[in-house]
Length: 293
Image 1 (cartoon, one colour):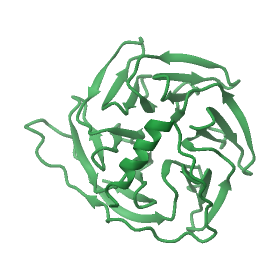
Image 2: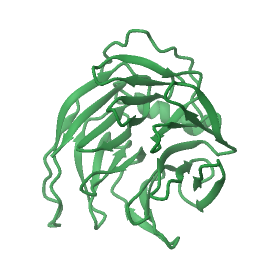
Image 3: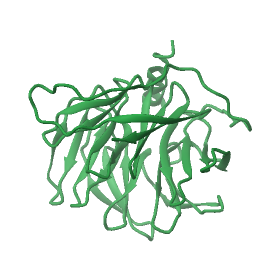
Image 4: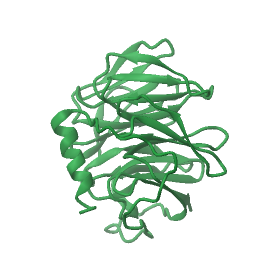
């Protein structure tokens, strides 16, 4: 049954365009059920030369409500979006939980700017919120189309995956929206590399590269169904959630992949921060923290 739950939630998302279950975040977060995630050592990839990536599970944070996005501030505090709880939870470096902000619709993407402000995409309200360090919130940009994954580009613009309009847009500091790419296949996550190329997880089944000149190509089609989470590690590893196969994959330069974390029920959120990888599981209501080795 646990294995089936994330798929039922995904079907609901597809049919309604949002998920608005009224769930209130408990004052004391309790452990959630679910199988323990597995760490895998890279194996043979059909004779291809692979960059070796291994993960070691360090901590498990439990009690979230459909964790869809993860962010870490410059003090090392963890922030997790509760999709079905309409809130963002903060976990400080001592492991203390608190509600950082609530009253959101369906928070689906999180990203920090260089000034310590947190941005949250609200899927059901079609806006991006600017969340100040004190937890206050203001609308930063509106008129989006089920914004899902977000990240900052090398020029300081906020990249947004507009799921329902099949677009990637970028938003400048003034909240002005500019189209980057259209005609995608249900984009849900986006991240940029140091050269300015973008990598997009398409819920339709692939990861696409959008080059600086605007051209694009399928980077990898090895996924059951890519999730929101996609990020680039310190060694330029590209980690991406495979929601369809309940795992996280590393994508190599030739587009081949290896599974580095398996048995992540409802795998949606992924964040690479320094030498750490955070993975969110809808099924377990948990975030797993791995050391990257």
